[in-house]
Every structure is written in C-alpha cells, then in structure tokens.
Amino acid sequence: MARRPSGQPTDAELAILQVLWSEGPSGLGAVHEALRARRGVALTTVATTLKVMLDKGLVRREDGPKGYVWSAATTRGAAAAGMLGKILDHVFDGSARGLVAHLIEGGTLDDRDRRAIREMLDAADAPKPARRKKGGEA
Image (cartoon, rainbow, N blue to C red; front, side, top):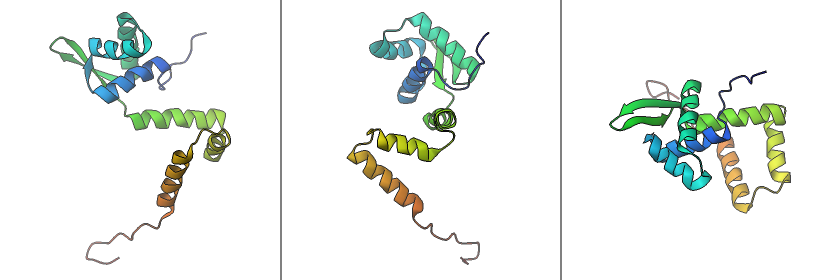
C-alpha cells in the first residue's frame, strides 16, 4: 500500500529547504552545488525532489533567465512548528513538559542552552504592559 502524502518535509526535502532559507531563491544548479558539498547528491535527484516539493506546496517555482528559480514556500518557523507538533503528538503524547524533561534528563542541554531557556521563560512570565485604549485611557 502506498504511503499517504505528508505535508512534513522528508530529510532530503528539509536539506533543500535549508539551502533555500539560507541562500534565498536559487536555480537548480545552485541548490545542487550547495547540497553536493554536504551530501553528495545527483542533480537529477535534486530536480525530482524539488518537483515533489512543489506538488506538496513546500517550494515555489518561477521562470528565470536560465531555467526555473526555486524558493521556499514555507518559513523555517512554520516547518519547525509542524515537525515539532508531530513529535509532540507521536512521541510525547502532546506533552511539551515531556519533551522538555527528555531534553533535560538526556543531558542534551549545556549551560548556555539552560540559561537561554530560563531567560525565555522569565520573559514569557513577565507581566505585559497594559495596552492603552483610544483616548489615552488604560
């Protein structure tokens, strides 16, 4: 039985998205060169993967002076949110606490990571300034 199509990028698709996020809109040759330096992938494989990604809505394609110009149709943040949501649902039963506990207990976080997370939590817990209504009233 065939797999259901997923809106989530595969590892190969994610590698292409990373190139497009960092380099911006690029031709097939530029995407291939960036990937080949990291993964040793064939040009035809990149072309096929880009077409699949186009069908999935992960990339856009425009006519350029020397062929198609490819760009990411999703942001890094949107892709991360989708992938993280899937991990939360399937691995941690929807529990962000479970994910954080796994990171802490697994020793994955160094001192700098822990400090940064504490700062983010403190900022999220800080009282928000009251928004003024029209007419200068709080």
